Length: 209
Image (cartoon, rainbow, N blue to C red; front, side, top):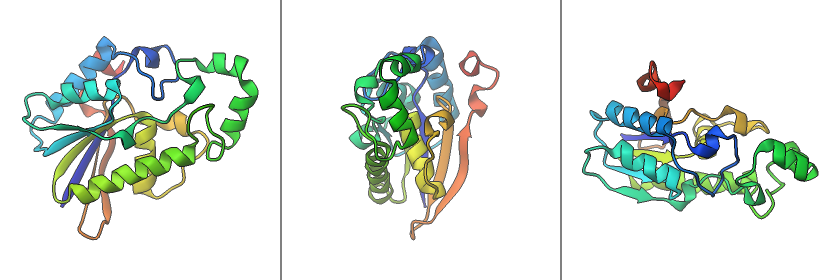
């Protein structure tokens, strides 16, 4: 049986400031670091063969913390990067609406076919994530892996495992930072969801406030 866990990186400064991050980066906050440490404690007793991380710093830093004392590799996978938001990266929603309102409206109405300026559209993003996720299933057959990625990336994974099409409000329904999800995949590639967006390890801590 193949078991795949996945989590979203810890909270960042730009998360707190409500800025679009995409492929740019901002540092983890103290809250984000604490959440990663709590997740590390939660998975301490879980046997993992490796961690597969987005190469973006906020995800890779989270992966390093979550690894804890485990003697396993962290493997970077470019396919698990967040969606490329192009010119919108680093900007707040209100700034984008004020400066590029018409372009933003076109994207929001049809994110599958309209690219972010100098970035990706949702269809391109989904296909990229889907390919990397399928590769993990094939390349780590009968192993236990943890994917550390981003809200949008995990939304694409959710769409794949639950067999639904992402809607236009996909950004508003992503998993919580440092939540934990888990699936099992059998030899015929049938997927069984064990749990999703679980935050039990964060309850009662400042990381969930």
